[in-house]
Amino acid sequence: MDFSNQEQLISKSRKEYQRLQSADQQVRSLFYRKAMIGGLLAGVLTLLFMGFGGFYITGDQAVVGFAKYIILAAVLGILLYQLKIASAEGQTFKRGIVVGMLASAVAAVTTAVGSILVNSIGQGDAVTIYPYFQAANNEVISTFTLAGVSLFEGLVAGMILTFIWLQILKDRSRAK
Image (cartoon, rainbow, N blue to C red):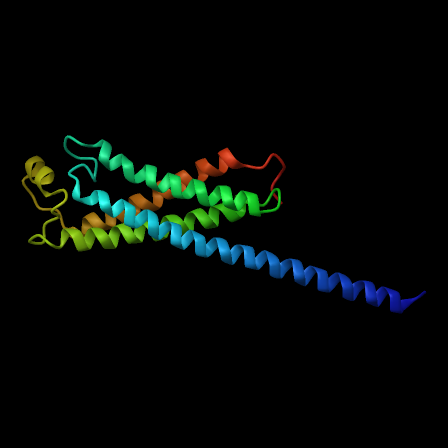
């Protein structure tokens, strides 16, 4: 038996494995950065709709509130499509869930913080929804309550949209 050839083969295999792991980690890091930037972009674009009366799907222009989902869906679709192209077959779903969750979380936090900033202009009432809420219940809704609802709504909507996109883009082979 020639042990030197076996040791060289083992050494070569280890180096190749480490090279592949390093390349895989670089691809993941790239998409995590893209997810954070995309989530920030979606959150900022969503904040632009906050001035409209229909941001929280209240009042006469409820379709304006639907626009925030379209923005988030577009950002997630672009990110997940790029991820599918860059991923090995059968690995898109696992990585896609993480990328979608990260982008959705960043967008939700950005929207919630922006909601606090925009709504704190008033007297402690949530100015973007106050007229509708007061007319319905004759009570005041807190700015922080509205921000919390926006955060939860963004996380849930983002994960649902991520799952929908991953089903549309899924590989035909089994996950590895």
